[in-house]
Length: 317
Image 1 (tube, rainbow, N blue to C red):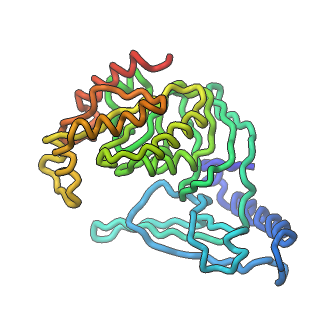
Image 2 (cartoon, helix red, strand yellow):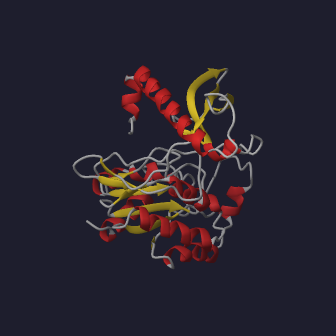
Image 3 (cartoon, helix red, strand yellow):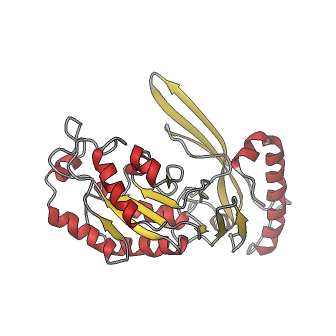
């Protein structure tokens, strides 16, 4: 059974009672599986953890968090997991903080193949999670387009460019699912491994990546990402948009970690080598790159439209 976000928010008491019943049933099953099981009727001692982070969005009630549980008794990490049961936000003196409460519960059954109809144009089915896991809940694309864009902070900006929005119709997931600001290819692979929806309707997947990696080569990760995307979107053609670099990049902005300086002095040969690993794994590299612009994030960048026009001629209809 799956409750979507809107159902939970409108029927929070019903969803909570369902969750309690589910936990009770799982505990009874766990009591039969535990090695050297002993104890009362509960089967384990439940507890909660509260922690506060810098302001963060995207985490929802009943999301699963990966928590280091090596300090717990041996059976806990094997049979239990942490689920978000409370989220509070506070803003004080211009500082945004998020308090998250997680509760220890019996592990969910691993997802096996099952058909899920999202709407008349999109049908997906679930696959088991890969060994690489992240604290991000897998999400299903909820739009009607057949073209998906993933990657770094360029993702929504490129999709919302006036030309691209009208001619490419790119959809994208929530931040932290298949894209997120400031992330490189390793993180996108983790997101893709945690994403469990095979979507046969997706015809084109566009990746925006490179700048946050400082164009440092990682052949193995690129290969794994290509393989994972081909599994998740078996009918899709894969593209990669080359990121920003050059003397203008970061002009007038604080270079706290020295990244802008590295990117401003980036050699073209380094960039070419980075993207060759994508082309070697069946991903079409789009030229020109976003390249030498002061701020790569404005949807109004002329280079976005120029790249969009090239994509339009290459993408599957």
